[in-house]
Amino acid sequence: MAVTLPEVTYEWVCDAFEGEPDELGRESYVKSKIRHTVGKLKTRFGKRIESRLAAGQLEEDLFKDTVAEAVLRIIRNPEGYTTEQQGNYSYGLRAVVASGYLMFTAENMLDMLGEPSPVIGTFSIGDHRGG
Image (tube, rainbow, N blue to C red; front, side, top):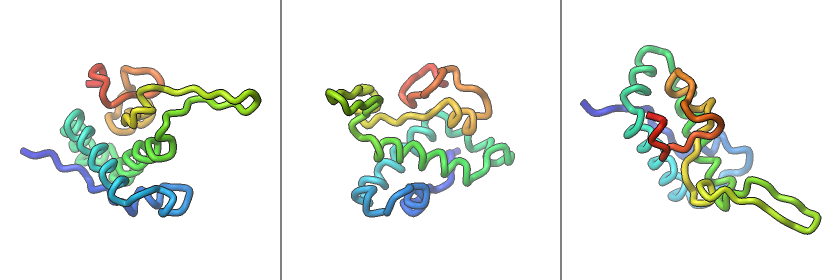
């Protein structure tokens, strides 16, 4: 049986964004990041998320907000800066983030799965330890 997760729309991500929609970039790019994010969650955790949604343990709006947060992390910081300084300018990059890789916080994963993430801090959806 196919896993069904709530649809997250471009408009939902726009509403979660603090700026104007035209600052997000191409609509098709944002939509591709939404598809990618939902697809990864569906592939890795779909049955667990679906059952939490059905049981009322995860609100549909929280699912959509969490997807929007992940998408916006990529859009807000495509270069992957982790630190920046002005005097004698310097910056730090996190290679995984700079690659446009999806990142979920431990809190995001707690919301989605209902249990603490086995990874402390930021959870990379590509990290197979996350189950």
